[in-house]
Image (cartoon, rainbow, N blue to C red; front, side):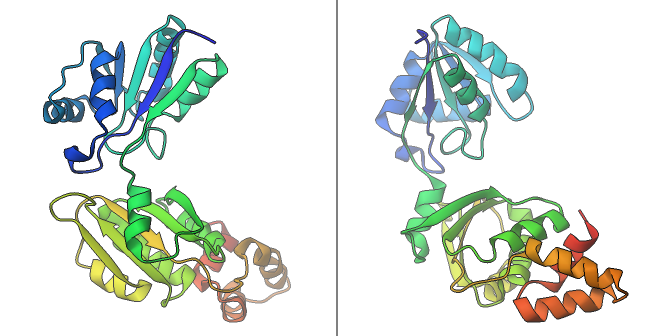
Length: 276
């Protein structure tokens, strides 16, 4: 095993008092600190009263590929490299996965400093079942791709956890309402651990109306799993295309299939025409 050590260090998702005591020690002792945002790291270090003595490098989505090679070389040379992102655990919908994969590939020890998790906190406060869940990260931004992703999840029985940008929340909730039905229960967790923390529970229809005026802050979504079998979108496409090939109008066919399966007519149409 190589002499270097890669440390994935979880950072607070809001309140800096939630930082694990080990986080300050790791930042202090690191040979290199790779930070998603060096300005945020500086503010965190001030809150923790710690002064990193090693090199501080930026490590974000725009330079991750290039900088990974540099960090791997430092690990080969025996450096202790600590990775921090803006909030939560590196590599979970944040930079870090490439470096972990590369470090494992050269037999470098990989460890982590545990800490706050928006996923687990949102689940815990949601009031929805938490015995089985799946994390979907961010949905695709394009409407057609998002509709197809949600259609594929419509029959998922486990509780779903997702991240979403506040300016896209209303559109995402509306797409979920279309794909999952208006009565599916969901929870919007906003600004967790921060001053204006808010947990809004309701049906998708209720949450769409609430979000229509705009929402601010970091958002984690928790959505109840399907309570019964739901048809899979992909399994319907071949039949739709055959009927269209035989002369039926696509809109009419999609309306038929939507009524029979509970799938979204719009999602079926978008998938059938390959709309992005």
